[in-house]
Length: 437
Ligand code: UDX
Image (cartoon, rainbow, N blue to C red; front, side):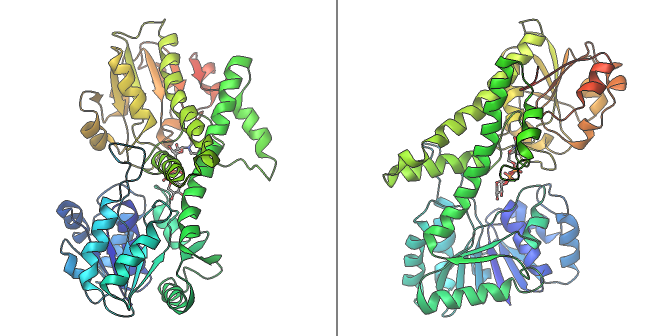
């Protein structure tokens, strides 16, 4: 099948390459020439494990082409809209500029029988509105909403082996037709045995924000328990293990620490609440404001903890921050808790050196005033305190003895509860973590 993918960011680039791997002829379109050039050369425009290999594999087949020209979508039977929906600059609502522009750009190129598939995360009600735009442009074309649940760092795996597939389609014949086309796109081997939920537009749109809100709530729940552990002298990691054994709760996404960041969870819960307010149902999700507040408080607590271990005065202290990405196996620094804490400490006068295996360039672009060091040992040299703020494997594997020989003071703050407390304390370190004595 001939497929177009509009928007080649984290979602679209992986989707385009994955669809080519499934055997489709894919044309990817993006307004950013740098992104298109990278993909044309078979290179991922960002760090995502497995994506370079996948691009090399599909390049050999010639089934993936990329372009900055919106007309390149002409002739595709299915058009996936994968553009971003960031938070608006003036409010918590989602900015739909890119989605609207993508649909407008696509409209003149639509033909009868084609299916436009929205994958971007949008406020509920958007699909119905866009279905009108698509229908006005080409009455024979259909819009479907097919949310994407991929996680950065696992994007290729999540796209090629999803745990469920959701289609939001209109009622009747056009909806059945759109679902059948999507089934053909995702045909074996991707969709075999995968639960498939065919529903209406609003449900499909809500599935995505509900899932992300649930995950954010789960993280903030355990971080709220961490606050309690801090004042009561408990240990949130043991608490999470214990409650996680209840299969109804589950241990996954119960890792207390600096909390969530990235391009999805923070902006999605805010946009969901803003949309619910617009619909007059703000009260139903007012708890999401609390989820957000708990999350932000963890960053403040980390700054306080750093101040405390440095004797109440951070000015002039040498602080090494390990991690800038919002999570490991990613170079994404959007709303990164690690980078936020690093910047706050620098504002307080600390001499902050940031290390990250992948995210330094992105971090520098966002926080140019911080000092960055690509060599891990050089970053650790002379530190008065070491803060582990993103749990990259190479930080978890650090040898506390070896690191101890590099630093000025053996003080480590484990912002992700990722290190072995015993190993570090045995090596003579003062070990402090969020939610633990
Ligand atoms: C998320 C959703 O998981 C994914 O399904 C959706 O499609 C997009 O948003 P992503 O933003 O890539 O994916 O990252 P995720 O792995 O969910 O982590 C989000 C944040 O939560 C990270 O900052 C991570 O460090 C934090 N987190 C995660 C915790 O603090 N504790 C946990 O237990 C899990």
